[in-house]
Length: 109
Image (cartoon, rainbow, N blue to C red; front, side):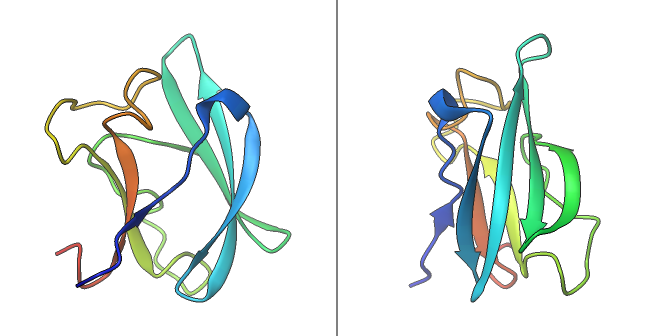
């Protein structure tokens, strides 16, 4: 059985950074929240190198999906609610029913 993980986003600490290992590579995520638009963005770092700034977390859309090179995670990170309670990412849903699931390339098909 696959080990399914999700990004551990702590809304009470925003804005903040955390490190997570994905397929033996450590990435740093910096999480921000826009209260006016009720949406979250993430910046992605590999070491001290900024790979992507201000990626909006959109329900059902893969984070960093258009960036397919060896610097970006070799996994799909998809905001989703497996319970079917929510269909959007906002303050009330992220970390409650919606999580940014980390799926290996083969698992996300």
